[in-house]
Image (cartoon, rainbow, N blue to C red; front, side, top):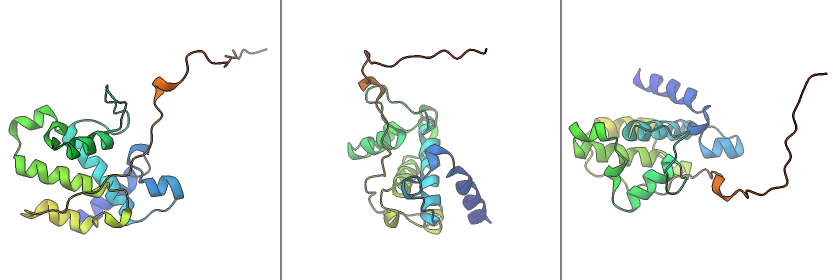
Length: 160
């Protein structure tokens, strides 16, 4: 039952832009690993208290996944956590969830766990999880690099 609910939820979420797996967005290839990717994004959103779409890190104009990965590689993963959760969290459970979230959004779909494995990792006393590899980064255009003096015109549309 949980697997069916999770599958339905992530299948729905995959069609929202921040949850769509890169291989589906790029090549139109959808698989069970696309669902895993979507689940990972949702998990990281829950932990951070931020939405992946519309996330803006003031210093770098980066996505939530890039931000999470940077904190992971800089050995500061707890900085991802929403401050409200930090008050009452179990640090080992949070670390497990961050790791699982990053495992789910790895760039290569073959490196991502199956949803069955994700459920087992979340529910079990897994003490050793594999180290995640770099997530699939969907490039965002940096709006600060757009030249301010461009040759564009604005056309006002009016009725006759």
